[in-house]
Length: 298
Image (cartoon, rainbow, N blue to C red; front, side, top):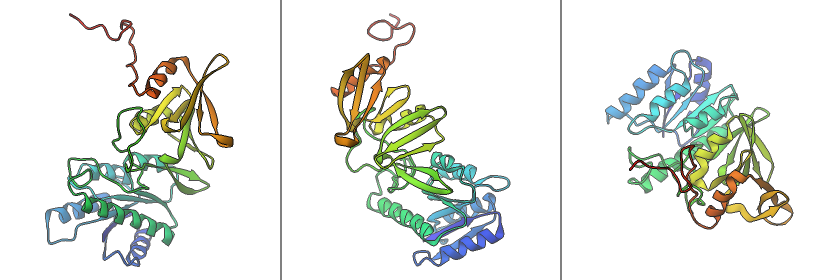
């Protein structure tokens, strides 16, 4: 692979280039001290077939001028954008990296095994594009097909339906004592709203991320997650029971000692019943809607 390393601090850039060059899969390491030079290299490699194509960009976030996140957004607009791995000393931008579709998020000081893992994901992405050149990720007009471990949302079946077998899994970066842990969406049982944050509940524990539940509801609705309460978003395939309890309904996720029961608000009960019966939820009514939906002018 040909790798482009971008960092405005020369010692950090030299160290990154050295570590990348030690990996046997890397044949060439290009370096850029800022975003402007990085764009010149990338545009040159795509315009001139005699130059090696950049297969992945390892990018610092905080740089003068155009920063790493802004550069990543520019790259996403290219006809054939290279994967981006962020390399930073700051552990508070993982969610932002998630938003722009980073393949990985590495914290300085770099560890060889983490760098190797990022290259693993890049290799998997290149393999996916070669094996399905006409599918998503193999065509510049389609969304990228990314390997497991890539924090990017993917197109799934209709809202409220379980994800189709074989679809790419999304990974959420979470911060744990200075270490970025990648949590697969498929391991998340339910999401709990906590103000402007969301707590992701898995079988192993829970993780707090700086993103509102409403954002995850919009993003994950087509991946099989459904809102049952203003405080809860649940993985639809894990629901094993919907029943009355006291003054309202509750859903049961899973079976056995690890099962969890969560409340269903009155507002979401009818829609959840329709989804569980295999019918699409009714559209939300507006203030001027009739009993059967919007009133249209004749």
